[in-house]
Image 1: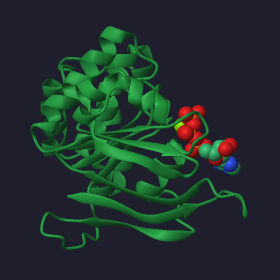
Image 2: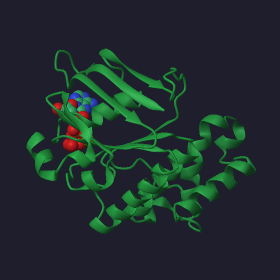
Image 3: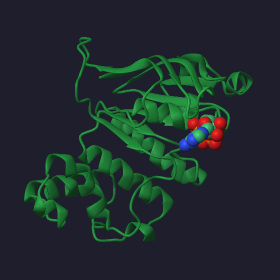
Length: 235
Ligand SMILES: Nc1ncnc2c1ncn2[C@@H]1O[C@H](COP(=O)(O)OP(=O)(O)OP(=O)(O)O)[C@@H](O)[C@H]1O
Ligand SMILES: [Mg+2]
């Protein structure tokens, strides 16, 4: 699957435009790192990509591998500051990912079909959270919360996860742990677009890098073709 932003303009308040003709492609099976200075519009870009904000001009389109448009692309969005619910358990948070295919009174009361619970258990196991189903999310560490957020996206069936500042608040070792996890999910065909300020993570964990500046993508290339110095220069 590919999610394409074509000539996207967006402003919260006319006539001030935050995005001024953004062209970028995010693919499943690929990690794209989105860089840009604070206030450059990275969060705005991900929200437009996730369909939470409508572009004022241009379009966002999802296509399958043969180029056919997808009407209901499987996209997960993890907001800056994670977006998991602290007062709920790990299992409850993950089951939220299954909400849109299980609408009914039972799910409103927190009862999901047995197979959904089993699927959630399987995902938690894969992400190293087995046995933590009943822990309250607010009592988890930052890295564990990130994994709960990923688990919810996987539960949703996401092929592409848009994750805003995903590793910004983690210590260096936990950051690497989470990025290694992302790398292993990539091998299973899941793609990620991650905004970050850390230019050093790009060559190691990114397949592609896109730099946002003055409302446009000023650099988009293979991560292996850039150096941290070059990226700092482009910011
Ligand atoms: N809800 C909003 N209403 C009005 N203006 C907004 C809103 N959200 C963001 N902006 C403005 O849009 C611009 C881009 O903000 P955005 O949050 O996308 O930047 P960012 O690159 O994610 O920054 P950071 O690295 O600090 O997270 C900023 O000038 C900001 O003030
Ligand atoms: Mg932001």
